[in-house]
Length: 122
Image (cartoon, rainbow, N blue to C red; front, side, top):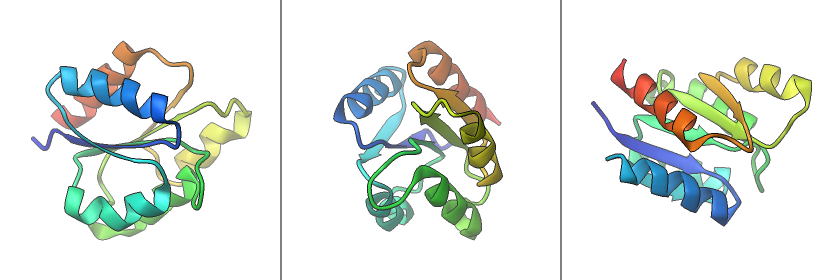
């Protein structure tokens, strides 16, 4: 099982919070602060799962999600969208772009961990 998780969020606090909780539970975590950097590095990172914010500089999370789904190497990689966007259509847009799951901030680190573990065990 690939326990490498790529976390992409433009908020340093969020990156630290999510990374800390995943590392504490045995996951290998890579982080990026924008979608373009993540897109450039994802091939070398080769994550088993991606945690992705929607609102980021340079490329939105939904656009990045759609690009990952179009790339055969990552078309089946679980993608959890984690966002502060509370618009009703945000979840619909994320799922239409190919997200596996959707969570809103503030979030429960325990719930995120459970989802990550669940998707990586499949």
